Length: 291
Image (tube, rainbow, N blue to C red; front, side):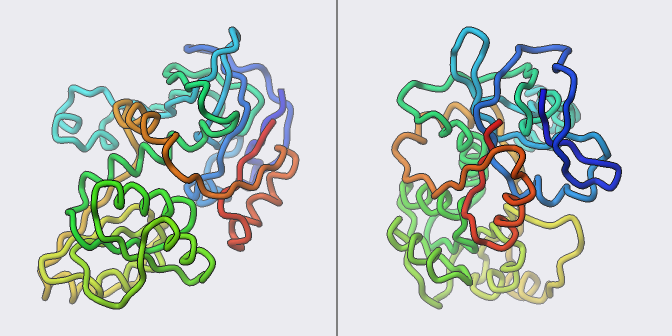
C-alpha cells in the first residue's frame, strides 16, 4: 500500500509499504488531517515513521469510523488525577503505521454517524482535544490566541458555554472569521487565555487580569522566550492540555454536526510536501490528505 513515511533525514516521502498487521481491525483511510504536531515532527521523528492521527476511515464491512491513536488506561494514579495524557499506557500508539497511508490497523475505533460528510471525521480528534482542554479554562472573558482551524473550534466551543470570547491573530481574514463565529476583538483585560499558537504567549500573559489563567494548547519542542514577571506579579495560573480520551471523542461526535467547520484544502498523498508548505505559509487553514 502507499504511505507517506519519513526518510533517513526525517523528511516525508511517498513509499510502498506492506499491509499493516498486528492487533486491531483494518481501516481503509478515506482522509487524514494534517495536525501542527505532525509538522513539528518532520525532521525529528525516527526514519520510517508514518505520521497522521486525524483519521476518517471505513471498516471492511463499510462502516465509517474514526480512530484513537492513543488511549489511557483509565485507572492509574495519573488517570484518576485527570492527567490521562501522562499515563504510561498513553505513550503506546494504537494505530499502525499512521494515518497518512491507504490503510491502518487500529485497536480503538469510534463509529461515525451517516449525517457527517465523507471527510468530516478528521475533525473528531482535534475537537475532542479542545473539549477536554476547555474544562481547564475558567469561564468569563476568554482570549483565544490564534484563529486558525483550531482557534475557530475554540471560539465556537467557548461561545456555546456562554463565554465572552476575544480573538486575536496576525491575519485579518482569520480574525474576521472568528467574528462571524461570535468572537470580538479589543484590548481589555481577560480572565483566561487559550494559546493555540506559541508565538502569542507573551501577548496572552500581558492581557490576563490578576489571578487569571493561561492554557497552553500548542507549544514547540524548543524553548520559548518569555518573561515570568507577569506570572509572578499577577499570580497567574499556567496549565497545559494535550490530546483527548475516549469520552471526549464521544462528546465531539455529539457536538460536531452543529459546528461551522473550518475551510479545508484537500490533496492526495503524493502532494504531501505541497500541503505542508501551504500549512507553514498560512495559505491553507486546514490541509487534509486523501489516499
